Amino acid sequence: MKLQVTQENLNRALGSVARVANSRNTLPILANVLVKTSSNRLSLSATNLDIAITHYIGAKVSTEGSITVPARLMQDFVNSLPSSVINLELEETKLRVTTDQYRSVVNGIVADDFPVMPAITGGKAWTVNGALLKKGLQQVVFAASSDETRPVLTGVLFHTIDNKLVIAATDSYRLAEKSLGTNKEAIRLLIPASSLHDLLRILGDGGDDVSVTHDEQQVLFRVGDVELVTRLVDGNYPDYQKLIPSGFTSEATLKRSDFVNVTKVSSLFARESAGSVTIEVDEDSGSLSIRSVASQLGENTATAEAKVTGSGSITLNSRYLLDALNALSGDTVSFGFNGKLEPTLLRDPASDDYRHVIMPLKG
Image 1 (cartoon, rainbow, N blue to C red):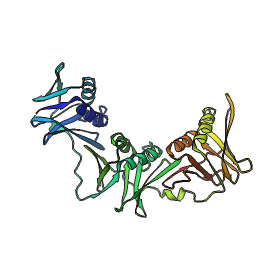
Image 2: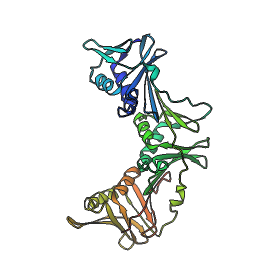
Image 3: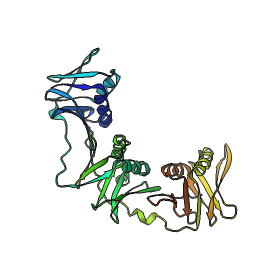
Image 4: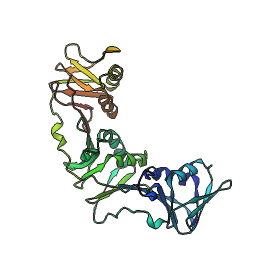
């Protein structure tokens, strides 16, 4: 293998894939990145056996070949090089990396031992707008659980409802749901939230379509020159829609920025009580107030003007409330609930494509 590539392109590709390589795995080769020529292009791949990312870049290839090299070393090294043309030349299992100023040799492992994710054959294929997918994932993925004892809840559900693609995540304490618009394919996929965090890093700010291909075991996302393939989570996702309330005995509509501010202030006094704050809406005064008590520090009540229907109070985790408010994108937020023990719903009254449910605390 012998080729030339720019430092910028090689650095960007290593940044895309190296994060997946895992030095703590029992297979040493999984700490490596696969460097391989492919039709006058260079591909860099990394995998942890559950997810694999491949990034293709342009290169001037003189001789074809492949090798795996330590991902962490290669990424840090190339990132440290000045902007220039880099020469890569393979001699047995040693990769020579040279520029005008630097001469280095990186010891590799033969590419034959590098595990490859099985190809997806005969699966479904569809596309989704990249900017819409990125925004939707940012609004939903954080609500998935990180508790591996309940693996189903560590996934994000992609499914179609009335010909619309909807994504949802819950950790049983909160639930986020986002509609991504029309989709002709009938879809039901449970994708690991950890893999979608990697997809978010790959998705750019452009509105290019993302190509999605999947079968019963895997899903492949193609984003420009990058491919991400991940295993699906096995199991039945709970019927979460039963949790979403449709009507409210108490509801407040207010500026989202005001709600964020009063929640932030109250959360400072809620650290002792694991973030517990009590929210009260008062129809007579047209206000929403948040009260928090810290026995050692003091107490706080913060109030914001709101349009209120039906007075009442509910106790929530302030961190979950801030996460939900930051995920909403409109200037106004509607906050509704039915008594102290029923779930509360946050949404943008001007748009029905995003809903966020938080379960109450016993206060």
